[in-house]
Length: 219
Ligand SMILES: [Zn+2]
Image 1 (tube, rainbow, N blue to C red):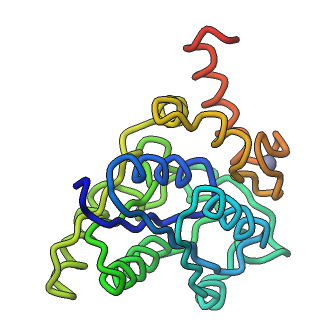
Image 2: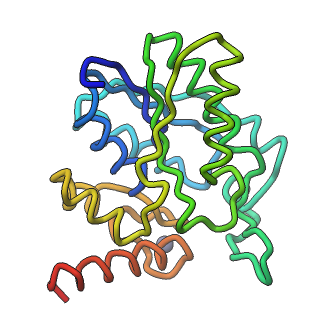
Image 3: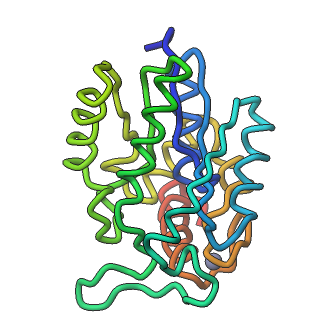
């Protein structure tokens, strides 16, 4: 794999930034793709740009604003507050088919730039019930993508079976713990690094970080 080229689906958050570092260790050449779909904070795009600039990674930004046309939800609309799902319901941040679209477009882009590998930071372990973060979906998508273009691409999901603490551990092993902690944006309220501390995304990130720091004996 060392001689191959890879595309990372990249949002500027903790998970995809960890994946970016993972890819840089695995592949000779790495490019990143960010999808602009009117997410709450344009800052997310800016943050992604800053990270790729700093790491010297070629960055593609694709306009996916049609997503908010198809499925208005709390990530794409300012007038809807992010809420967790109750009683097994999906949270209202769910964008139906988001990874189906993102991976399709990433695959077409990959073919265009001659990349054989696609990396996405989806995880089944911590997943909020999003069906298109599951391992089965990704495997099915991999087959479909190759059939659709008569290609031989591989979708990699380095975080698939990791919880949030283990994702911090992976960043640490890749020498990127502090970088990921300081420069990524996970917070629904648009606060970089440790975030607002109160939204669902911050809670999840903070709990994982606390677990990992305890494991390292620093708390
Ligand atoms: Zn927050």
